[in-house]
Image 1: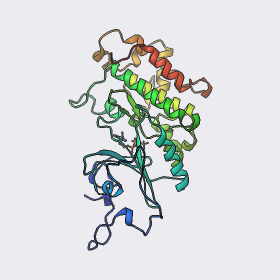
Image 2 (image 1 turned 180 degrees about the vertical axis):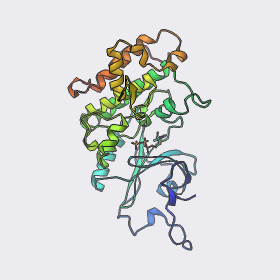
Image 3 (image 1 turned 135 degrees about the horizontal axis):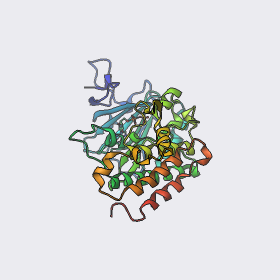
Image 4 (image 1 turned 90 degrees about the horizontal axis):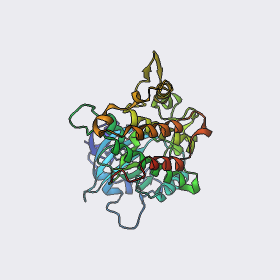
Length: 342
Ligand SMILES: Nc1ncnc2c1ncn2[C@@H]1O[C@H](COP(=O)(O)OP(=O)(O)OP(=O)(O)O)[C@@H](O)[C@H]1O
């Protein structure tokens, strides 16, 4: 199936657009001159040896992984069997120059806990970002996908600790970017993946500031955005820390912040408020995901309570009370000073 209906999720096809005239040969984006501005070519990072070019990419088989707020994400396998993720960005609010500048900053961020931006493409019609593909899926899928079904691998405490440790290190690296001013703007479990050592790895870096702002209602219902954020393009490092705190709470409770607000005591409240409420009543043990305890054996509760305190500090309503991400990394590493894989 070709891309003509690529608004639909979970379909296969090719990224190249179908030519409207069935008798003419398929057009190649690189040679298309009706809409593409001069100089529109795919820009790669990381050396000269590229396993594919734009034409290979567009003619490769593509599977839609899902449609996010800013466009559709495809898994693309090129002829030489390289698999990458291509994001076709639909809501870019900046011109070519600013887009390229942002992509160049993202491309410079290289860290084992940050998903690599491999390449980008800008033309009037299309803006693409090419990332590494993570075959195990996102943390969101790992936590909430098919609970109780045979194909979901339960996550014990060590696995969750590794994910939190890696993701915190990745976010700290991102905040070091652009002379310490870079922000992510969209930290959530569907943008966290696993690296080869099963540590968390942050994806979808730095797109928020160049895209249209999400509506306020979407921000509130997502459950990840800090309360002070009214325009997602104006996210801050402190709002990233808030979102990261929500991910920590999600890891501990197994509850999705995006699901309808947690029902507690007759009131609907978001995940952070519900946890604050339960902890204030000294019922801390009640918030934890039962799966952690059943999968991990004994002796992990103390570490979970420490992580809960870190998560709650991150989701402080007052920005000045949230820790810096470097402090968060240190606090998480101190939970278990030895490597959690050992
Ligand atoms: N590099 C990747 N490797 C594997 N899966 C990915 C990758 N990037 C995104 N995905 C998955 O593809 C799906 C769609 O992602 P997309 O980023 O478009 O939407 P989202 O994460 O749901 O929302 P948002 O647009 O706010 O980030 C999600 O399930 C996401 O976890």
